[in-house]
Amino acid sequence: MNNIYINSIKQISTQSPLTDDWIEHPVYYSEPYVRAMEPDYKQFFTPNEARRFGKILKRALLVSRQTMAESGVALPNAIITGTGLGCIESTEIFLDKLVRDGEELLNPTHFMQSTHNTISSLIAIDTKCHGYNSTYAHKGISFECALQDAFLQMQSGKIQTALVGAHDEMTPAYFTLLKKAGYFGNPNQTFAGETAVAMMLSTEKTEQTVCEIEAMEKMYGNDVETHNCASLPNDINYIMLGTNGNPETDKIYFENCARLFPNIPLLQYKHIFGEGYTAPALGVYAAAICLLRGEIPEHLRIGISDDPISDSLISDSLISDFPISDNRTSDNRTSENRISKILCYNHFENKNHTFILLSKSLTK
Image 1: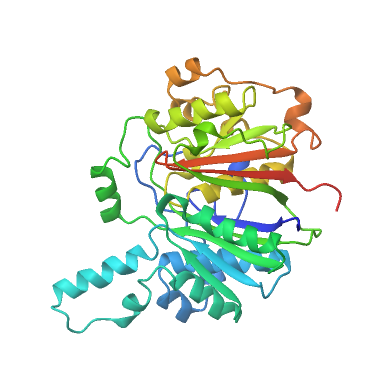
Image 2: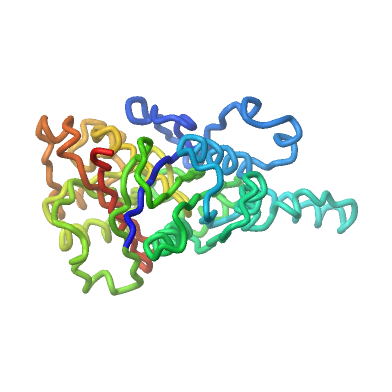
């Protein structure tokens, strides 16, 4: 089977867009709901494009263009997108005008941009890509489904390159609904954020390669309780968890890690990137950048960080019940040779569990 590499990866989120400044200078938030930091779109889009496209489309198209340019792949074999909410802002605008104007004088733009697959379609039109094009809208596992689709097709040799994206926006109205449903707003829980991540996958390693996707597993329900992860190597350096400050969901991470991966240090990312249906893509992004740079920033560490904001999200009882390993030797913190494998573990409502193993790309 083919090896699969991430040759470029970009983000627009609640951190500084299109950069890795969050490594040294993370931006923290106390608000329960934060929208993404927008780059200066005038530098990247014509006035006509900037006027016609909604926020999520501009973000998705920009990170895709930047990713393709950096990877040197102008025409990928496939474009695969994961989105939990799709173009929810355009959907809300269209429905609001539909009710308010009595189904008369409606702007067709918001209707055309209101479907989930608008994102992949726009990227395909922009790149003139007529290959495989698919969108996964499965709530909290939308990104993982898109990545698994590309992963399996590339392993089997059906495609050699794939642009995989994860894009979601959060409107004030939808945040209010999710908060009433208990999805957000719990004490000490991280904020609701927005996601725009694009990565170029390839079966060929290049000078721009960020890391390798060594393995990926997705399981449902109680399968994780009997799973031993025997297919994963025993030399994993860190585990990147999708903890969000909710003790009920965070406890599942700690229980499974204590059983499956004892004595492996734990990391987090949602305290700076926020929570959302496709937030796991930001976890993969953060892990990939850590592997590329050969360092783990202090503010990502769980339980042993000197950053009080980072530790405040995780319940003290969870940390005491499940002791967290600390292998922060001076070599491990700075040596590129010691940080070689990071496992990204996320679950959605304790029903869908995903494991994505990233390994450092060695000599090219």
